[in-house]
Picture (spheres, rainbow, N blue to C red):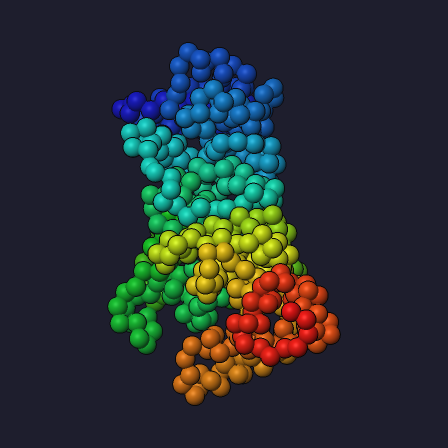
Length: 470
Ligand SMILES: Nc1ncnc2c1ncn2[C@@H]1O[C@H](COP(=O)(O)OP(=O)(O)OP(=O)(O)O)[C@@H](O)[C@H]1O
């Protein structure tokens, strides 16, 4: 019984057309085939199917070109691209906008039918569903060209089920990007489950991922579903994949190949449909070369790679991000918004940010709470940022002493450490700067990175007894 779903298949390979025609018709769909892309656009002007399934490599107009034309003329028509993994990178790179689904070759016919069905359903539910407000999702901020690349990749990969590997230092926003990929995928209505391989003790990781049966080990008092099952239909984000123990890598590889697994201590296999997005701050190629990461697993995960640049490689984003985090902190804390003075924005833009965006986010929260005025001055910065562009190594000694000092006072039951520490911190720097300039405040202010008035105000506030000119 036809279900009214019209699907067009475009492939120059007769046997593929035949296989697909048969499988899709058997699934109740109405199929029309084309040998080449050239006649498809003209045919589309007369009628539109519910989905297009096209090969990439074809004589004349190829699949990506066809995709581009269809997107421009019929933006809502789902297009499924069939290609081998090895060709996908270049195909995706050649494609500059919108989104498509992807069917890896060689494919299983049931998988093909299922994908077509989902594409059609997705289109129908989109047409019926009210437009969702876009504001609820956490925003990804980025004006730097390197971030625009990342956004383009998210756009290109939207609607696809493809495995993605995200590379980037800690705190660069890997999870945020993974979430965006999920939200823009056909899986958006299903769960997004995140799991950090480095944060879970090795011996618990297996049951965390795959669950366990009752009695599988001491303490397993009931059956528990693992993250794979929780993510069924949706996306599993595996952070710090480079830290996955070798035996689990082997297991993961099998699960990815078979789409099924056994819970720890279980005898019945569990079938899941999960999209994997993996992330790491490490260089997986190096880990492979050193024999610490399975090469076959690496290739399985490394289908599409997104690199998120470190914050210091996109300094133009620092003031924009800081503004965003300050506004957010103000809303969360129900406080009046605060703004960075321009010299503070410039100073922040020059720092190294080893903790990347997360470090900046924390610094903004700190400044929101600690700055007394509406404007944030240089002396409102958290102490760990006061070291300027110093490398951590040269700043380590005094930070270690500071840490020991804080620890000692906390052990003695002291509270409000910052009210004790901040004035002493500032006083020390002021004294050193004044000593170096022979008491000249104008010069000392410059050395400290303050305006002269700020220095004078500070000297008064701290009730410092300094000689030299006013
Ligand atoms: N471009 C961005 N715009 C807005 N917020 C961001 C951006 N990048 C990161 N963040 C915020 O910074 C914090 C860290 O981001 P996230 O957890 O995604 O980083 P990560 O790379 O996954 O870190 P880790 O590797 O340490 O797990 C989060 O609170 C996130 O919302």
